[in-house]
Image 1 (cartoon, one colour):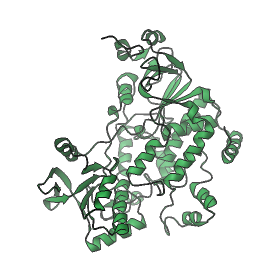
Image 2 (cartoon, one colour):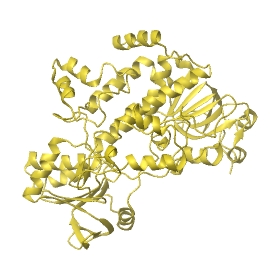
Image 3 (cartoon, helix red, strand yellow):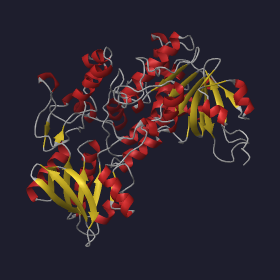
Image 4 (tube, one colour):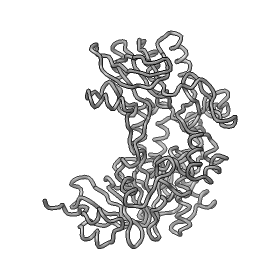
Length: 505
């Protein structure tokens, strides 16, 4: 079989370091650009935003992505996990992916736009007199849309799927892109750069073993669903007749699914029964010691944000930067665990459901799921009181289990050929400035940010503020290498004025 022009050869696939001649011999066209970001999501967007504010021209940056705009994946995930654009997300007002300065905050912007002091009063009263204030999802997307146009993001974006990243023998890297079919004369294009940035997000989702076995055996993808999959049909079915839903998990997604079920029940007068199953049932405040306590109750572990606030600039951040190996992993375990914000609205709904008997929560581990002859789904659950069966019309899995990074093609190749290693939590090991350890190539550097680096020296990597912290560290390291300017006070002030006026960088 004749190989298509511009395809990866066995010589390229087997070599950890490539020469220009090897790529040329394979017939793969080469595009030269100093900085390449792989992913194209919010992680890429925030990093590119920093570089543009620092004065890096559009011509020196390319973002290789298979999505149309940076917020596309996040917008999809929020929508299917029951956070439509009018609803509020978990991130607070202190960080904005469209604004590296964080001022004005989302709360101040909303107050100005709507001509009301309500958001500011809310912020002043949190968390004692009000829930933590958070922005609406739609406002986050609108801000990124505006900033994308301002920095010329579309001029930097290249559509395609990245196949792998390999070192170049003269320093730097080759990033292999597969463009859309028929868009060019060759199957692959090589981007030759000094720097590469990986922001590929989560490797993927995986189901709990019992749910995966059920779906594979019965080919039923309608009644057993993951909260991150489209599952609007569940809510539509429940509007037609009474039904029972088994919700599994105790994090933010589970609480949003619960609120959607309870909102629909209240709004449409439904007779939905909700059975809620926790793997770990929290009955009260918990933690290893007095200074590391988290509120809890009714099964949930409560925390306003993904991580304690001190990981972004306090004692936990400073402590984590000094730890390696088992000590770092132990601190992650100490402050980790599934948690959700304690929102007054759905707390009231759950109390009402418990009193009226249509919301029941318990702890247990599911051993097996099967369909009964009457069409219901039966879950065999092991708990403290022994085994029992739970019957439901639908099962919504909100456990949010994540696939191993080796299941992502680019990351797997880096682990095998690029010199990358794993951190104490099994993700990519990065330096304090987010360069992937072991992947240096001459005067080039390969960086990574986002969820694939969780377990590193900085804990809050998969948050808006965490992505901005990583972007700032990367931009500062690039400035130390002499590739771009550091954002000093004069430039920062001037660029903020341009941002406020909506003028291009």
